[in-house]
Length: 496
Image (cartoon, rainbow, N blue to C red; front, side, top):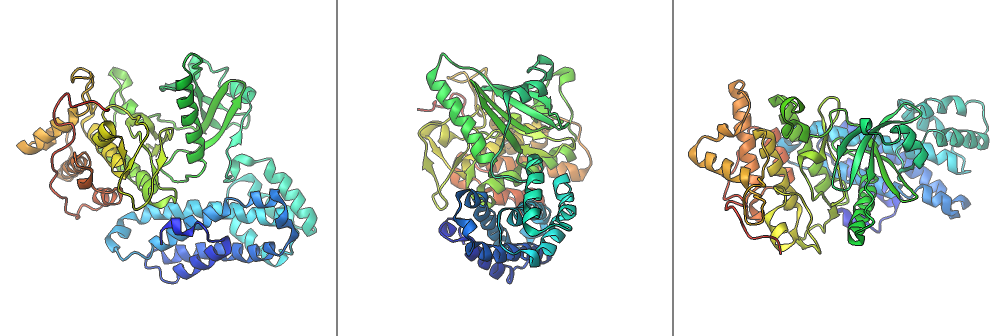
């Protein structure tokens, strides 16, 4: 069932639907049963809450505002396990396990909230709730069993609620934290140059350390007082980032921890990614260029594909990222990728193949031709950007050139190079590093062919991200022959 059809369904009805859907799952049966156990407990508590006068208070209702979205996501995840496509689930099992884990954590946070905000008699459920949340690692959760012991239900709610409020970073909250400017000035040593780790079109990124020792990335937007229109764009991107990243939770999506809007400052605080952006491994020169072996590159490609698949199909919001490029792919300590920068992201209407945008802003080389020339966007626009990203990862070169073309930017530099090599039967020449064994060589050729499928000129011929993720993970899946890529001719007409 499409998530849009659930818009008017209440939370208790969603619980029933999740339980019913779990009875017919074909994959991840044990994990689904564990999830449903938690959902059923929430359903029982919701029924008691509905009869309570506490639910008439706005602060109580607001405290449960995210619950419906969590239950919708749970329903979508459980129904995805009903799919008959065994091959797909065989190779996507690990990622689905991650999605289940994230959803379980969010449900566990809800379970902590119930006994804190209500005066209903939950003593018959407390043991079950504690049993579920006890494995969590945050200090606040570890102390919950101790706080419950020997307290009346009312005193317990008050004490635990106070303890949870002291540790907001350790819970999955619907709203990001509000940092003070003083906190972030201290964390970044007054935004010193020594702490700067990156710079984009709208701001600088600094490494910071909060008072509790947590290392974070702090993005401080530039002041642009001379251009009101640009200020509007900056504010739109800033609000976009907050809107999307507070609703998205996936192992391959960067986490937004909070923000600061104080005086004239606009600042965002993210989890810190020790290896910076993928761009450091592609465009760095000399000693600044870092090396990635093929297994690391392959893992990055698959991780980004899973992140995009989550945005397009599984997150419930139907999101198009709109600006996929190496500088927006961040790498953690273990080189696991996370998609960042949702300033240009937008939602799309399921079932509608393409939509018209009032403006198109993207990055040279990664913007699909239909976006650039006709202001048409779709999920296939992101697929094009992903294909361009693959060509850069494989070749270690930029997918565009600033030295040619009518407008001074050649969007199809790598498209043409890969296409010529494909037609000449020398595709492996695109790979710039020393080759490994025959298995590695075969995988590299396969990835370049998938990239060519993604950058095809006609968006209707490009695969979906679900198909791309399957092709990258399952080497037994036959690949179609690629057709003409976009921007095959230098100096193609500019966007109108």
